[in-house]
Length: 180
Ligand code: PRP
Image (cartoon, rainbow, N blue to C red):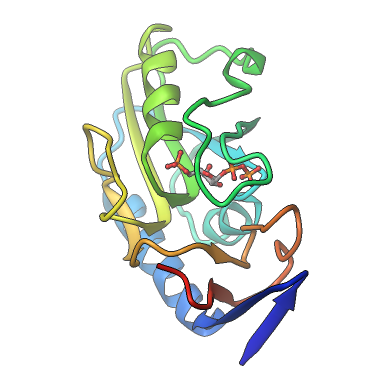
């Protein structure tokens, strides 16, 4: 199955059923983790809105949920190298364990920047849950611990992820054709 957005063609990579299995597995691991206190979950918008909505419905641990819009890709296929939006987070995080929720960890710049920002504010710990992980482009220092699936270093859309703001609504995940 294919979708076309503008002049770009994408082919089916991960079905909605497969995504649901991955989300279930992540939720189980989070449920089994020993949390010293109820974690504060931070959904990184926009891409993580669908992952977050599905994941939290499977969580059985006490937690609270906040949203933060961070962006580094603008309308490009590669990261700009700069994360925008960190200063807009005004929630008190002191003495809380934090669980960052990401649709995808690519270079790792977004989670690394946020982790550093939070550590300066006295959090107990920072954990990361992501549906997708690209080991080929990861340049961060700490691997995400609750991870759904590793994928090759190609551009993907769907299930919250976009190309120039299109495709976030797709229930499945698609990969750019002829990508490399
Ligand atoms: C995407 C994605 C992650 C980030 C991962 O966000 O949702 O937040 O990039 O890339 P990284 O590991 O290289 O930092 P994007 O900047 O495209 O914003 P969006 O979620 O609003 O689309």
